[in-house]
Length: 572
Ligand code: 6R9
Image 1 (cartoon, protein in one colour):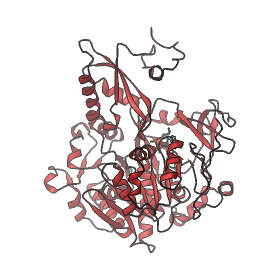
Image 2 (cartoon, protein in one colour):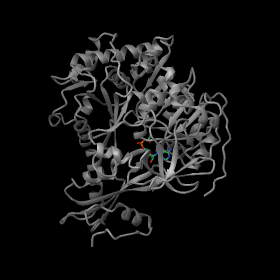
Image 3 (cartoon, protein in one colour):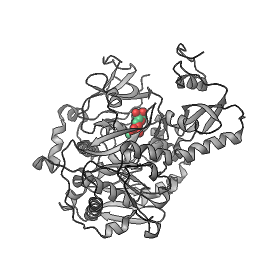
């Protein structure tokens, strides 16, 4: 288990100094001085991210550098301030108040970012949704959050069951006036009518700001609530982990539907006043390298699944592009295979720095830092101000190389403050006093580096997306041919895991490849493309507990040819 491979430090211009010394001396209160609220006691994270720079000499610096196959646009900090102010005024005019939930369901375009910031500026809670979501997924989230307003596009509106959402009063359409149905607002028309000056809603640090839904192993997706105070962590991890420096051009490849696309696709870069590259459209190796080369990206934050796809695309394609601007590369979302780190070093001439955190943690907690040796395969060491440990189920800290619960001493600035309308779920994370239990298992080595082992629940991580097996199973059994379904993550060299479904058919239906494809499409169009099982296997009967729970660990053992373990709870 001991790992001796090391990648030496290669950058010099980092902000942090010696990791050990900083870890010893740092405390979070040192960060507060960076922000306006240290003088006023009141805060607004969108103000700190945008307006603060627009008002202190960086007004003409490019904040947003946007491109997709049809659009190429840039916006300065001053323009971002004005656009988000206008959107804040649109919401105010409609009657949106502090604490209301405003959801955004649209592809990555500048309008998404104006809406996101404008919502926060008036003290409302913003909830970004992946454009890939289908009707059920959209409905579950809008229903649970009781969202009163939604920003979406004409195409995506078809997946919003408006009549079944009594709380949803206002819909703002990003599209032409002709595409905007009677009774709905047109984004551009409303923006036109709105002043670029806005009276910002000054809030308390602990006031809610952002909601991300994430999958658990059972039940519906959980609404993870974050507060304005999270910006402390976004700012400081941006400095020390992303190594953001004045003049940087930063690209985070994540969509704001995923927490990485907000904490590190919006807050960290803008709180640090750097240029943020946003690219719409799908993944494609050439387009991605072109985005790095054309925009002269200096800091690049992506995910293992993307790096693996780039690796699969081959080394030749890399050579077509001048990637010399890239200084720092980072990864999050799944285990970063040592093989990928080695390959990155070889083809990019740079180390890929793994980082570990979760939707619930709101920001990076464990990372590899520019000035630290990297042990390929390790997630790195805790961020200053963060105490991470491996503990057993009673809360005892375990010695090096012992596998256990990856846990974090509470609190830290960007920790979630609520699971929306589900205090019991929230408490489960804190069941051992003083600790946040991540649900990941890991171990620590003698140098304090953390090594990821797996999820302790059944959550599947496919291409960096967390998928709850329960959500997929629920959709599967809606299909008329499906009697029962059990869903697991099956190891996959490119996607980390793929979704595999075991399905028992209803009487009268017969197994066939056509039926498999039909069931797959049913999930794809009914739930989300990334949630559709890549593999389906028909079974006469599924292993279940006496209380009727599908035993996914048995399915997994079957799949991997491993012993099935204790079957005492299995039904006869
Ligand atoms: C930011 C984000 C969280 C889960 C987490 C863990 C896995 C994230 C990882 C990693 C191994 C890493 N995960 N980073 N596993 N190495 N560097 O990913 O949030 O979507 O909520 O997922 O992802 O299992 O518990 P989220």
